[in-house]
Image (tube, rainbow, N blue to C red; front, side, top):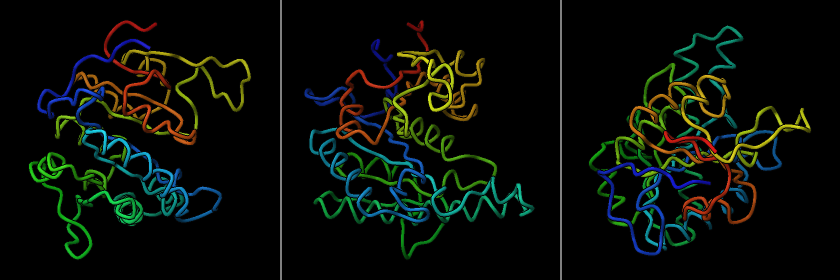
Length: 256
């Protein structure tokens, strides 16, 4: 994997022992299912929290954007006749539930955590305010950014890219169930090959689908590198955050 280009100039100064000073970790709602058919598996939250705690303790500032597909998928509901904006708002509420579950797991490791929601619900989460989120990060708190962008018709991938650019993160880490981006679906095509690196333009032109096109375009416009990796392998979240060469790097330079 080649070095990621510098990004997020507004971010904090990088600690000497880490690759990135500030990261955004995108976790899908489905990742929280574990072996369940619905809802949140506390064991998965604990698995994620233990690695995020290691990253935080090493000096890297961590923001997490979580999806809600384990509870409700707005696009699927819209396809069955529900009004799209209503379906998307329900999905945003699901991300807040997931954020609270992750907060509980993180705070059980001793890491101070804040859930910030793009939809006001002051009894359970702080409102998302960019400068306040950055201040929490500077104080060493993990920030969970819930409710997407607060607007329908946008995915949580786009929310992750937007928040990463807003808070000056140096990389967007996309945690998935596969170990990178492939030439085809590796579960269907045994001959599919994994890319070590890709350019934003290749992802968009080939419609690889690892993130939605709006998220990729936003990262491209702001020179924000993306790392796609398998979150189910032990220690991979920590390794990705430390800059180890795992998964697929998507950036603006030449692909390898």
